[in-house]
Length: 138
Ligand code: CMP
Image 1 (cartoon, rainbow, N blue to C red):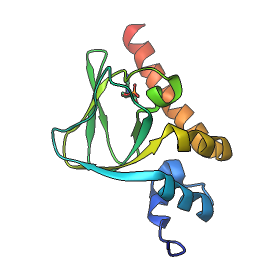
Image 2 (image 1 turned 120 degrees about the horizontal axis):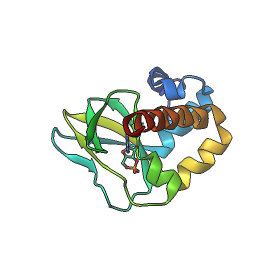
Image 3 (image 1 turned 90 degrees about the horizontal axis):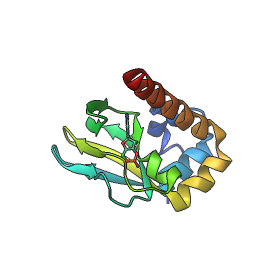
């Protein structure tokens, strides 16, 4: 049984800062904690993916468009396969030991609909990435 307030540490992730204690507990319930070693591929380009990842600790790198993007605690990835129903668009590799929460589409989509603040945080991240790509090709 979860203790009340047990998952408050997740509030340090900007993504989750506005959630009620109940919704924060739901995040902890639907998110599966996973760890990866330095050099491990976390997702592979072209593979089928049904999950989004939120980095809790460590650093990861995305190889996309001939560029490397660094990801750190609080960053997310894997939203493109989750929302776009297409294979993974890039490979994401752990550059040091990584701890993350993995959210399966089946559980995460209904959660997003109930928690617009998290959906908006994902949109903001996607817009930032889109802008970076536009500037690079523009
Ligand atoms: P997805 O396609 O599911 O798996 C690979 C992930 O890498 C992708 O979701 C995004 O989260 C991330 N990604 C892809 N392209 C970029 C980019 N240009 N900048 C930052 N992250 C990216």
